[in-house]
Amino acid sequence: MASRKDTILKAAKRTAKQAHAAASKRGGKSRMRVGVEPHRHCSVCWKPISLDSDPSICDDESCQKMFERREKSRKRFSFLMYFGIAIFVGLLAVQIFMGASG
Ligand SMILES: [Zn+2]
View 1 (cartoon, helix red, strand yellow):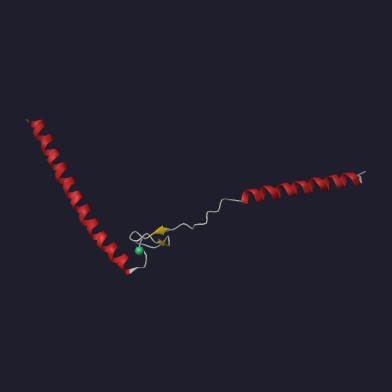
View 2 (view 1 turned 90 degrees about the horizontal axis):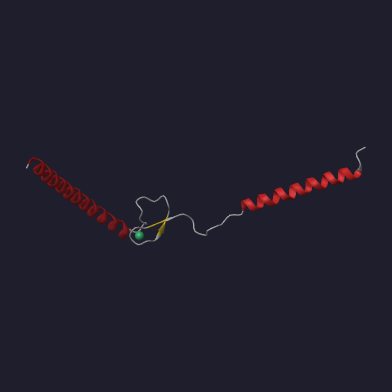
């Protein structure tokens, strides 16, 4: 005969299980919330801007101009750098070649 006690015991067990599940779920949900959203900064004035803004500058006109100027000088610089490396490598190759032959 299924006694009344048995039913109560089952019910109690189920409630305990539910409580446990709820607790563990709540525990899993709690995570560290850092108050700052992911963002980037304007490369000129370091103002926080949205993550998808490209190039990474704010809407400020002076910043845009500055960015363009920087970009140009950077391109020139990288060109000169590659040019210099090419010369360096060329000279090195010549020296190696001379050393091997001489
Ligand atoms: Zn800016």
